[in-house]
Amino acid sequence: MTERISREELVRIYNIEITFFDELVDVGLLNIETENEIRYLLYEDLPVFERFTNWHYDLEINLPGLEVISDMLRKMEALKQKNRELMNKLSAMNDQYEDI
Image (cartoon, rainbow, N blue to C red; front, side, top):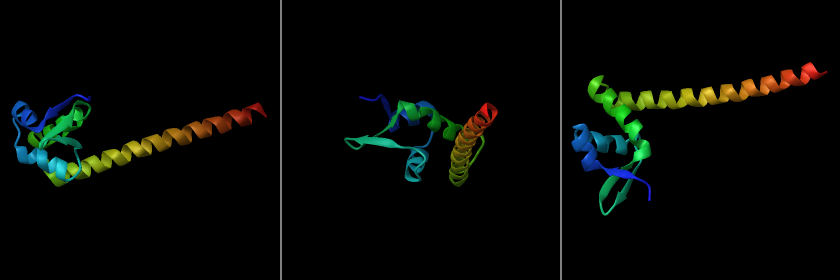
């Protein structure tokens, strides 16, 4: 079984509003598991939760801002991956032409 932490524990440990957690889930920024009506966050998703919590409470970024930032970061990561793929293809092509 994957390790996880309940929403109630997160609210207590991080001293956040339960509605903030629920809003992150509702807009799709956090993926959770539900068992016996208890919401759980997987430990592997904790860094994402902590990042959103810090941005919201420390930098006062609202939920729509968190959505925009998250979307931009996802797009940037996809572009980085595409750039790596293109650079690898270009490198392979250069290697082929050097052999000629």
